Every structure is written in structure tokens, then in C-alpha cells.
Image 1 (tube, rainbow, N blue to C red):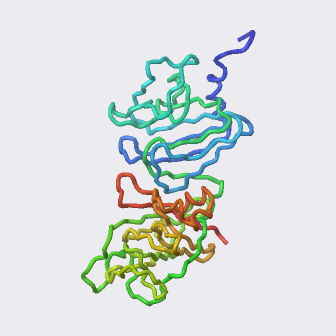
Image 2 (image 1 turned 45 degrees about the vertical axis):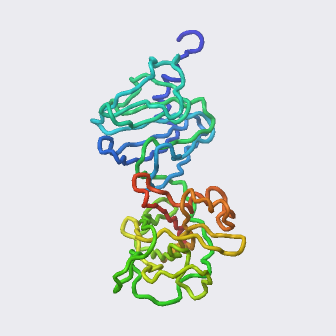
Length: 349
């Protein structure tokens, strides 16, 4: 415009700013094959903006969980889908433009093939003109008025994050007094039965799946993953355990497996019972881990289960800050409630 401020400038300039500003890319493989692989792109809209990614490669996230955050300056973001993904947008009775109103949190904004929900607005956002899509596959949402915000996942999917920002190593914890001392031949991934016995361990069978990665999110192959735990009644197979709960002769209680080529590991075990650590302290269900590999700092830690009421009263877990607690509490897979995911982050020496 020859005179005065161009009211369309902030929106019309975002295509250019997106090309030159700080960006963070997170590739997400959706469970829904009609969506498949997509890319979330966060863009810091000012010179000093920072895009901080908090997820890591291989992590499984649910819709609404945080992927990262913006620091300083305004911001925007978009989703980039594969060619051929058919999107139908719900503009909530509005027309695109500067006069559009904010869409409420968690409102539907798009569907795929008219039936499967693929995206939700995750904060107060403005609708943009559809011409802002790249090959009809990029969705832009205006968040330039935010000084600090967060990225949130749009659907349940494993996340593949590529970032130069180092991840925090898994917090350490005491090994405790019950590391196995009796030799046993059977230390395979299945703790629910013992080789040579026909019986099956008592209690709820669960799956622990996870990955060992380094502080840059890269898989760590052939790390030794050492696991031990109490049985369903809260009793360890250890001579120092004075708990009066019964031993389970069919529970293996201890396993050692290597991580695979992609850093993955898996255990089939029993949901451990809580047990008294003292007259005034009951330990919540947890599983001990010791992870080691030459060239990395060994991690001895404990994995907790989400939403257990004893977590908030545990003297060990409560010593950790919130970020550390989050790293130590497993993620329950929403469509497989018997399966828990636990990610181990090792630091190089």
C-alpha cells in the first residue's frame, strides 16, 4: 500500500517468514494408514525465537501431549501431509481471513475421507486462507500473537524427532537392596514362566516395550538391559526381603536382554505389587532397570506406572523434579492397556 499500514501484512508475510525463520521438524507416523507419515513444522516467527523439541525418536504419543515449545517472539506452525491425503476442513461457519474468530481448544478442524478425525486446534488460533497450503497438503495456523507456547500432538502416533538439542539422560535411582544374588539360568525376556516348569506366574500379565537411545535421540544397539522386580504380591526373590508376602515359584523375577538394532527391547512380565519399605512408607509398584554399554554412562533407575496413587507419596520419586518424574513414569499404550512404554536415554562418556 502507498500509504499507511497494510492490515493483511502479518498474514501475507508468513509464507516468506516461514522460509527464513527458525524451524523445527518432527516426523510423525500415524497409526491410521489413511494419514501415514506426516511432518509437523514449528516456526519461530522472530529473530530470537527458539523451537524447543521435547519428544524423541521412537516415542509413542497421544493426541494432545506436548511435542515441544516456543521461546521468545511470535510463532506459527503447520502440518505437511503426503500427496493424496484427502482433507476436508471444518471452518466452523466462518470465512478465512483477518476477521475470523478463534477456534476453541480441541475443536475439530479437519477430517480425512469424511470420517476419520485427523487434527484438532490445540490453542486459541486464527484460520488462514486455504491458498496458504503447499500442494494442498500444508495446514497453517496463526499463533504469531503468542510469546511462549507449546506444540501438542494431533493424534496418537509414534514420533521421530531429529534435534540437535540434547535430551536429558534417564534419571538415576538407588539400586536398592534386592538386586538378585542367586544364580539362575533363565533370564530371558519372559518373566511369567521359568524354563523347565509348567506353571505360570500369578498376577496381571503386562508387556514392557521400550528403546535405548542416546542424548541426541539415536538408537543404542546392544546395550545390556537388566531388569528385576517384585512379584504380584510385592515380594522379591532375595534373602534380604523380609516381607511376609508369599514367593511365587513360577515367577522369574529377573531378566537380562540386549537392545536390538533400533535400540528396542521388550519384556513380558507381571504387574508388580506394592510393598512396605517401613511402617510409614509403602513403595508403589515399580521395576528396576540397569542399562549399560561400553562408551556410555551406566544408568540404574526405577520405572513407575502411570496414575498409581502411591506415586505421589513415594519418598524416592518425590525427590525428583517434574521433568525427571515424567521420564521415570512409563507410558500406558491407549489401545493396548496391558502394554507400557519406557524410553532409556544414555549419555556418552
